[in-house]
Image (cartoon, rainbow, N blue to C red):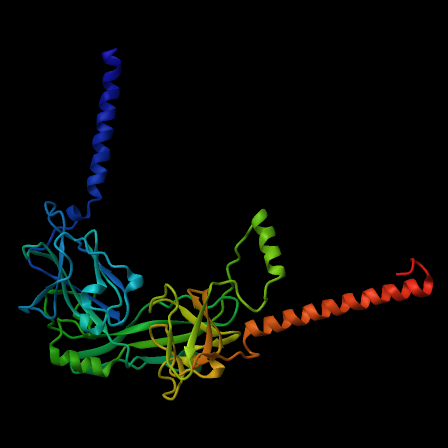
Length: 412
């Protein structure tokens, strides 16, 4: 019996060792040794974007990491972004523009999450221990969208050409095109371009995907040159039209029957999305955000059945605009008027996700309008009810007349 089971035991033990070896190979900290000399990976983002900075290497004996922030290389002031046990957790849904710096950072496992980054968050981020030993670093450049330049491809506009100043070259690096922001109707898609420069002799401590090429706000660039590049080359936005079909959601069985019945009494011009009601004082400003949307997402806005295309409503297209869409995909109304009443629909990544019904009040009085879909629906319902009662009344009197003249029924 022992001779029979000995090969099986050997096979089992060899398989266990092999499985253990596979698990060990997946350990990223064994595959990525920490450099002897601290280096910084260059990364550029746009204002209000959220991103993740993973700690790609650390000694195995270190159970947790601490993230530090420095405004510039060699600074004597270093800020701790997390507690020493790495337990800081931030809910991204609660983060707002202008929030305190420490309220917009969170650590998950060994990665640092940054929510709604601002230009003042640019600098060096270091992964290390509570004793101040650094393992990995990032050179983060947050570029402001205040002077962002838009180019509408459908109108024949093109982005500015690259600039050359001696051995310095300043240019724009574009991201991939977004998804079409609407489906079933004409939509738009765009891509973001950030400022980069090419200059020989940059600091070797900063890692570059292309030799001697970094973002314009990188710490590898001298401060005077950073300021000059930022003024000459603001972030850019390319916009073009698109048209894609909507994805059909197939339903079978009882769900298909329920959907068909629910559509019979529904208002055909109101999409099936959650609608939030909001009252706004006449003459006051309003900002509407699309739920779950980020600046890099494809987001579109409609008012009732009217499409609010960026060609006409993008911030900066017209300086006297009262209603506009900013570069963070938020919809702005500088001061509300009575004709602003209605339902504002939000598209995200080609799918309508929410609606905001806006009512305008003045000193507590609500103004109804015939252009309001709810008012139209109430009037139609009242009209249908009146027609139905009139038809029943006429039918009863017709029956009475027939009975009287043709004696087809006893006297009533």
